[in-house]
Length: 201
Image 1 (cartoon, rainbow, N blue to C red):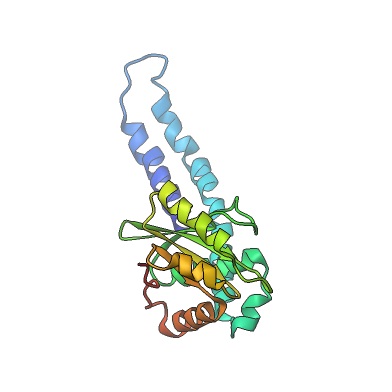
Image 2 (cartoon, one colour; image 1 turned 30 degrees about the horizontal axis):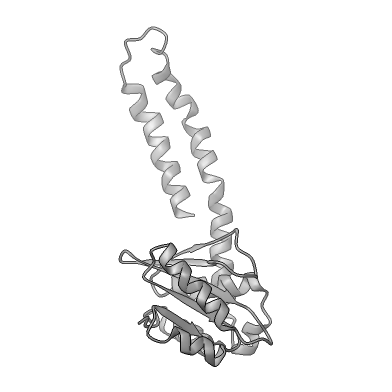
C-alpha cells in the first residue's frame, strides 16, 4: 500500500510543479506542459486506488497469524489462508515476500522470499491427512535450478515421508513439518519477528 501512496505523491509533484516548467519549442506540443497540473490530481487518485485494498489485506494477514494457537488451528485453514500465513511469518522475519497469485493448491512456487539479494522458493502443502512424498521434493529441487534460487522451502501442515527427508538431505532444501511450522509461528508472534530463516544446507 505504501508504494501506491509514494507513487501517487511523486507523480502529483512532477505533474503539478515540474511539467509546467518544461519549455517545448514544437508548436504542436507546446501546450502539453500546461496540462500537467490539470491531470495531476486525477492521475494521483488513480495510483492511490490500490492502497486501501493492499492495506486491508496486510492487516488481515497480520490478524490471521496472530490468532493461530497451535497446529490444529493451522490445519483448519484453507490452502490459500495457509499460504498467506506462511508468507506473513517470513515477512515478519524481514523477508520480502511475493505471493504467486496464479498458484493453486496443487503445487508450483507459492511464495518467493528475498533478503540481502538471496532468493528462496517456497511451496506450501496444506494436506490434512497425506504425507508429502518424495515426488514433490524432487520437483521443487528442479525448480531451484530453473529459477536460479539459493534454495527452496517446502512447508506442510502434516509430515514428510522418510524418502522425502532422505532425498532433501545435503541439498538446498528445507522441509518444514506441521509442528515445526507451529513453533515458528509462535516464535515470530512472541519475538515480533526477530527470527532467522530456517537453515538451508
